[in-house]
Length: 98
Image (spheres, rainbow, N blue to C red):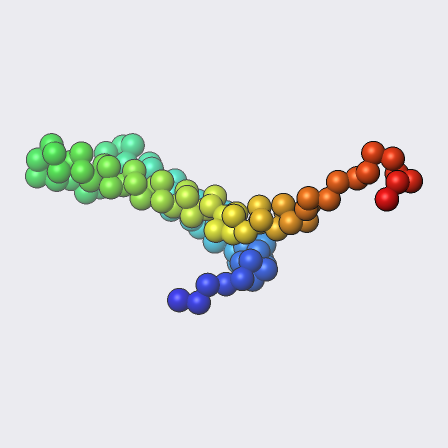
């Protein structure tokens, strides 16, 4: 898999298709899965233990989808860029002093 650059990711995320995918489609999937999990409908196991495992899996799916919606894979790179922009430059106490 080719990893996109930060600029490519930001462009796609800000595009109408990216906004729809993350803001509408994935959110609807997460909401529907959470509703199904909360109502305890859908897949049922043959034992109570199986039911708990199914509910845990569905809750994990919701967490994973929400992580994908909210996570910035370039967060560390953005922090590095920000710290480089600020740099270790210090202004002299006297502006006329160099």
